[in-house]
Length: 416
Image (cartoon, rainbow, N blue to C red; front, side, top):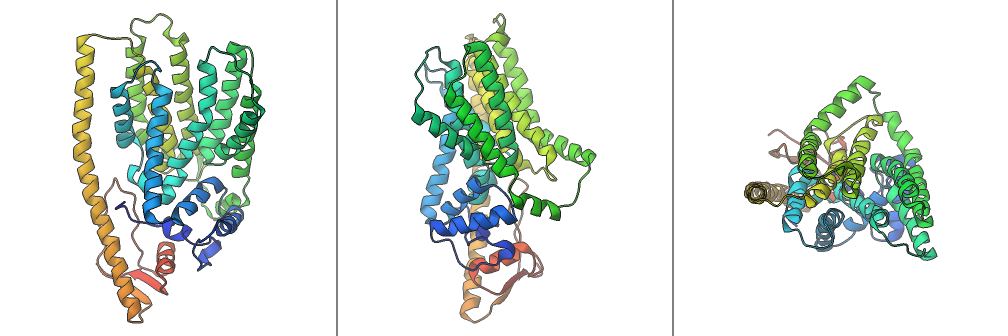
C-alpha cells in the first residue's frame, strides 16, 4: 500500500493514444477498449496484460493494492498445489516457495508491487499456471472422466487469454502444450478434446499477440542488435536470474534420486523436467527480442521454482541429518528474509515520501499559477529497485506523462 504509482502507471491511467495525446483519465470499460485498440495498432499486442493494468488503475488505491496482493498469494498457492503431494500438508515446502519467490524473482518490488509491471508479469504468470492446471491434473490422474462441452469451450477461451499475455511465455506455452499432448497420446493413449481446444485457443491468442501491428511500429523505432550482442545479454540475464535456480535444481535432483531406481521414469521427475524445459524455452525465446531486461525472466524463475518444488516435495529421505539440514536452511532463509524485508520496507517508505512531497509541491505551484515546474533534489536509487527518475528535459517521456498526470504544462529535474 505504500508503494507509489510510478512511470507507466501515470501513462496507463489515461485513455491510451500515441504520443501521450489524451488528457482524459480512464473512467469506464469503453475507455479501456479505446485504449487497447490504439495500443494494439501503435505500440504492442499485450492486450490482456494492459486491460488488467488499466482496470486496476481505474480503481480506488485500496482495491488495486488488495487485488494485487491477493494475486501474489494465488501465485504461491498455485505453485504449492502443483508441487505438493495431496496426502499431507508440507509447511517447509510452502515456506520455501514463498522465500524462493522473494529472493529469486527478478526486480521483485517492480514486478510484484508496481501495478503496470505486475499486470505484465505477476498476473500473466498466474493466468498461464491456472490454464495449464487441467493438463497437469489429467496427466497425473488414473481415472477416465467424461468430457463436458462447456469445459471444452471454457478451455478454448481461457487458452486465448493465456496465449495473449507475454511474447516469450506465449510461444513457449504453445510449444509445451504440443509436448504435453504428445505425452497424453503416448502414455495415456488418448488426447481429450478440451486439451486440443485449449491448445488451439493458446495458439490463436499467441498469434493475436505476435501479429499486432503495434509490434512492428515499435520495432521500426528500435536499433538493430547483432546475434552476438543478444547472446551476450542473454548470458548476462541468465547468470543473474536463472543460474542459482539451475544449481539448486541439480542439487535437489541428486537428493530426489537417492534410493530410487529408474527415478527418471517417475511421474514427479517427468513433470519437473516439463517445467524445467518450460522455464528455459521462455528464457531462450527472448533471443528474438531486441532487449532482454531482467524482468522478462519472471515466468522462467516461477517455473524453475515449480520444477524444484515438485522434486523437493517427493524426496524420500527421512534421516535426522536431512531433517536437521532442512530446518537449518529454512531458519537461515527466514532470518535473512526478515533483514531484507526491513531494508526493502524502509526504502519503500522513503520512495513513497519522496513522490508524495513532489506531489504536494506540484499542487502548491499549481495554486500559484505556475505550470512549468522545476524540481530540486533527486531520488536516491537502489540497485534492487527498478524505479524512474525524472529527466532534465521537459521533452523526456517520463516527464511528459508525469506532467499530464498532475495537470501541468511541463516538469523537469533541476540541479541537485
